Length: 334
Ligand code: PBG
Image (cartoon, rainbow, N blue to C red):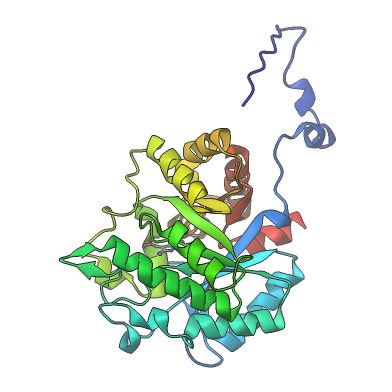
């Protein structure tokens, strides 16, 4: 970022002058949030006519595919450009190796086909990782109690192919294995999907804010005695995020994700200063739940606080934001 030093002295300079009225504040505002910046994450479940509440994630539901289509219609009506989908996999389909991820006809692949058939103009982002499918809840396969990197990458690249085949527009590996972007890019290209976009979760931190999400996809119980610290980033680091992003760009990532968002604004800014690549940020489930619970306890105004959070994320340098509040905020800024 360029450094400009503008020197002014009171009383000739009064910074409050430009803040006097809404029209003036609008003229000088440096950051704006538009509906074009929003991505709504959605949870899907097996069955018909199902809408399920998620205990730790207030105001967010899981939908069976038929109900999901109604929700996507609502998303489309607000011109929100994209959604991302996450499956709640039935217990009986979870295995130690997560092989349901490689079922061409699994819940996610069926949902992709239905969404693209009915809403060809909505961007569809699909998570690549094994956590919804494994009995232990880790993002990859376990060998001697360690997530085996290269073996996992093999499986993830196949998962990505099936999602691309079903019609996913953006493949989003959220697993933090080393080298997966390059392998996935090569496989996509070899199989004729050279236009499928890769959004790499490049700097995904081993965060305490993912709890409600793990409830939502049903991976929490299995992971409780464990954590993801030997593959997700240590939240004490930010230089390391630069290396992660640099490697992913070299491997062919089209966009990079920083996640969570609000506790990592410095990381967003650092990446923005060093690279010319679209940066996405994920306002994760815990960040969102705090706002909702704050509203319930009457300690804050949910809508205004959500807006402020999202503006902060944009001000830091993000070009798009995953938020469970996408529809609420679209209503407000419409
Ligand atoms: C897992 C995944 C997680 C989230 C998105 N993909 C959780 C995790 O890494 O355990 C979290 C999103 C949220 O908390 O809203 N691949």
